[in-house]
Image (cartoon, rainbow, N blue to C red):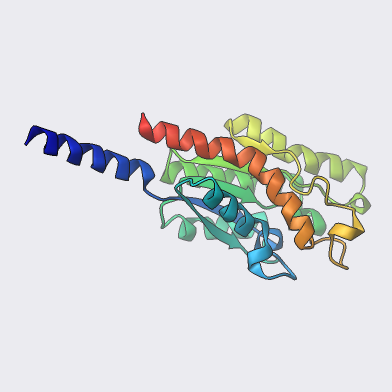
Length: 210
């Protein structure tokens, strides 16, 4: 009887450890896979990597074309009605394209982080860095680029230095608009994200075991 009870306890514990957790991508047209099938977008490719690694996580892609940091801040409360264990913030690109004041972008991103921590203090947060186009001028582009490492350091969260590293500016890896990645470009973006995300997922599992 004692052995049976112990087996049930171990089974219950193992089930809790393997219980599926949610990785939420809060993003814009890059996450949404603009111009492509959503299965080709980098969040879907991340889900494939998770399956290959047999990790108990499910990706929720909340990418919305045209989204700004202000829009993300308005949406986050609704998105957090579900349990979110890892939040990847992929916003800011449209702010840069529209010339929105860096201080406003920073304030919106901080608001998203604050709401996530209020809802689930134990959740992990990853911020993906973006850059403004050079035609916005040196002063603006430098201030804009500095937003992301500043917020990451202040909040002690993980930072992907530049989401489009190795993709931006390469005609072969972008659609004719020169902004959105091709399917091949998304594969490179997925690798960039995975380098930061994979260790976070591992730590999330370890924390649950403890």
